[in-house]
Image 1 (cartoon, rainbow, N blue to C red):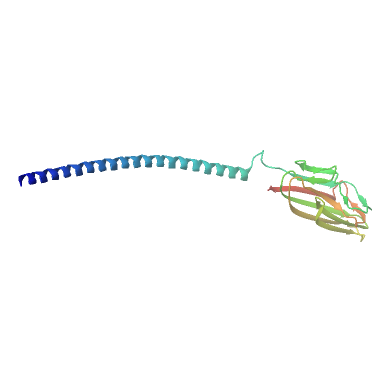
Image 2: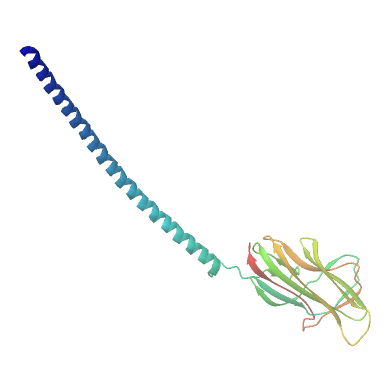
Length: 214
């Protein structure tokens, strides 16, 4: 009996010591796991701070870029404007449509109006405003049209066939979206007859300007 009691006591003490050893090992592993989690959390917080810094820099760059787009600068703003007049009369008797060459340039910012051809050539894609005026002399019956690359966009009719002390005239304004290189010019249509009237005072004229780029 004494041996059995002693054995039981020894076995119990052994089991307690094993359990205590196991608990110590588990606690140590838990401590190590917590330490690794803390290190991982600190690294993640550091990366988050870096990402926030990058986002702020990107936002600042975007705001600056947007501001530059709105305000522009000397290098980025396209300045385009022209005003040309016809300094003499044209007696239209052609059986073909004829381009009016407005021969005297008052303004040609950007040099987009080419006097040799009587055409405006769009230097940048954008939305442009154009206006043209045609006077007709006595007995003149003039049909004018604004052309873009050979296509009619707007037209006017000036009937000077009724003689009076006043010179008949007509004007038209158009706002057009153009691609770079598009050609804009004014035609006298072939069914026109008589005198297109103008002088150095520019009774007949053609003008335009860039409103904004696309």
